[in-house]
Length: 454
Image (cartoon, rainbow, N blue to C red; front, side, top):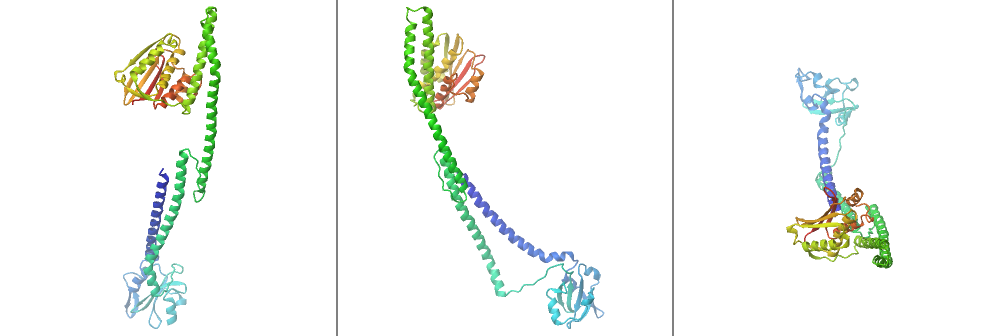
């Protein structure tokens, strides 16, 4: 069983693939966010602050925006703008709030040049004409500068890639470690399932993440062992009961048969009394046959009947069975016909000849006992693809629908009505063959015995 091994491999590969995908996705998203974050706030402005600062020109001893666009077009999306000279005086402004319209000291310029001026995010550009200050609406963007020593930043940049690799390998190691531990637990479960499938008791250690599953397997194994023990005791009791009853009945039944046969041939008795004795003998023989069938089917069911197989040539074997049965008193009122194909005459079969004879005779008896005389029984043989078939048909009324249903669907086994036919099924199964019961056309019963050739 390699199901759990495949499951673990797929789990490990899937975990590694997902991890690598997440790492690549994180790094890609980080770069994408960093790239676009610097331009997202400018997407609402017609022109960038650098373009506006470059568009300032001196004309008629004053500053003004390039007349390619109107000031409103240049400043679309911005709140205000101003230009300071070297002394901090305002030499140009656009919509500058009144409270901001004054000169600025060096300290004030140093304060707002980095981040904000009175809550307005501002961008400063030092040009030849002065310091150009452009403001955005309050709360429109977030601005903050981070200072760091060059040596620390250099160390971070140089150590970032090894650190990322270390983290990735650490995560992979944890995944492999946990997967290995999980695989060991699942291998124990796999061995337990294999043992359970072979009918052996299972006792798995209840630990790890498969503890619940191991506990369930242990409980299932205990229940199956208990149930198998109950079934074994029941089957043993049944077999012993059948054997004991058969042994106890055998002696009185032999006496009844002997006395009935003596009375049947006693000329001092009347013909009517002799006929009654004959019926007693016939019914007693049926009882003896039924007891033998019960013993045989019980042995075959539990493998207590050893097969004494040897090589048998099909042609002479079938001729002997048909001839002996036809000469027996059981065949009174019936005719028999044996039709063997030429390619089956010398077929070699490895069978228990006694059991196979019993199976065929059971079919003959079934045709004669359950049909009014005269009955014609035909035995045919045919061969194909490494098998040989023995086909037995009669001209009777055929199998009753209930009996045929029980035979085909395996219901009602060991009932007296089909016990002999059930023995045929068991004998064929013991030989690695099969039997099929059906109706003959136009009338009668038909049974097909299939056996493998040697």
